[in-house]
Length: 395
Image (cartoon, rainbow, N blue to C red):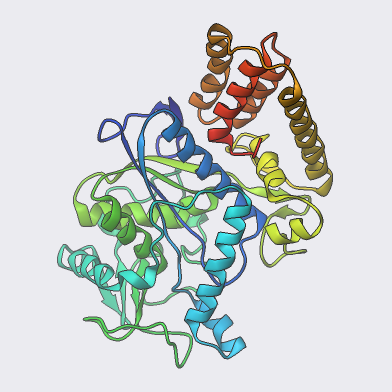
């Protein structure tokens, strides 16, 4: 089985750290709003990857966090005059509604950032002791100049980079180096921020990047097989995760980086701030079962940008409905016996597609090949049921 590793920029054979086991981490949502369908695409792909690893016999431990420490959560809570936890719990619940609709299985564990403050403080303290972090202006920063190589995912030119912080955050004059990033904030933009904790450096809250490193190491240990995320997280988020994790551990942390590319509209990258806010529930209100959207995502390879239009979604809906109708016809037919030789040969087409960097579009082609094959209905139905353990399209 081969997957594309963003770190080496090539397809590599998947070799787990512990034979038969895969430790897998994915960046979860920041829970201040509904996820949009651009967020839902990687969610479906991570689910497919996990299901296929299990299909191949691996024992997968999958951790996906909830970022429930964020300025946007505070802002939303202040606007609605409610406690921050009311906002985060509301959108965690909405996330599960969307995930269930998309046939996305819950991770093995879904920790919250707020549940891991003590562990985060311990890691930051160690980074300070090892000389990788410093205090300035009340905040704690990671010192990227201490690394042999910081820009691990691409050959970035430093002068071409935007400030390595999230959208809407002003450049920070406390930093020694442009690429340094905050591990712990004590200076908040909100006068009475509820999301704050005591620390050796003053009352404050952790930076975004340290949360994922801490949660992954706490639940999956010092060595990670696969780290998943959207391609927009490669820099700065995943770059910073690698920097702080390997500085803390003193060795390589994660072997494979699995990035899903953007979902675009005709006007560009999907965003919560641009145009119609396209959510899974909005698609449902327009008559599209979320499984149709999952099918739409699987028709394209995860490393290609995918363009969303209602016309494209309608095409996927039509194809899906025809597929289900053909399966319904098989169920009504005289079943016959399962032909083992035909079963094995047709199954090879599916596993070859999925072994080749999770090529879901070719896996769907293999599904159509089953329907067209000269085989008994029993053979076809057995294969469709087998493939759907991975595709999870309610076939």
